[in-house]
Image (cartoon, rainbow, N blue to C red; front, side, top):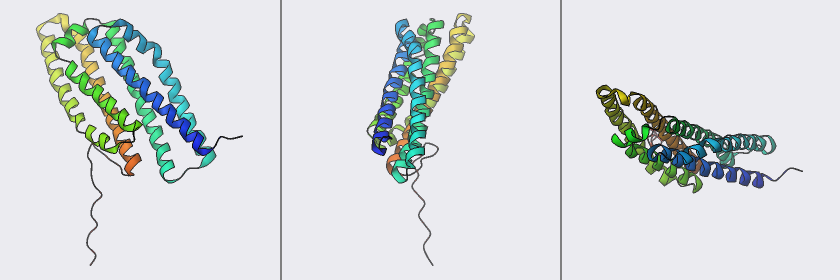
Length: 228
């Protein structure tokens, strides 16, 4: 006997919130591993990546099940479309956290260099974006999602500035070349993570207000021309 539509939707929401919670922790642990040299947290990120992948599959299957059994319309259809998209964004954020944790473990010298160039400014901005996008999702808070969007430009600017510092340091001192190259990879990873957080926020706005937000801008629908 099939579960009811509402039960299926509740299960989907629960899994998506659980996925969000795990991914947020993965990001926090990976960044702490990088900045603090905490190998235990880095190892934990690697060990828990399978949980993220398993939830990703379960959420996809759950969405397919609801589509097949209930043929949803209107706001319920919007919820399913958003769940699929956000699930994908969360899975990618989890993958990026895994990459950062691996770099932290494989090249411990990145910790000293990260401190030298002030990488914490960018990690903090990115973590704030991830946390805020997830809070907006959990609370279906479009206003919070809107406040997040301008932060993406901040992360982009920090990537440029810190990247230039790293190149200068590598040119001056060859011992920084390996950790410097790895940190440039981390910069790009953080910028992508911020983009995924922005995509989550845009989808929250679509879910709650039924309007699309593109290119990080909140554009109102154009005013129709006056009738002759």
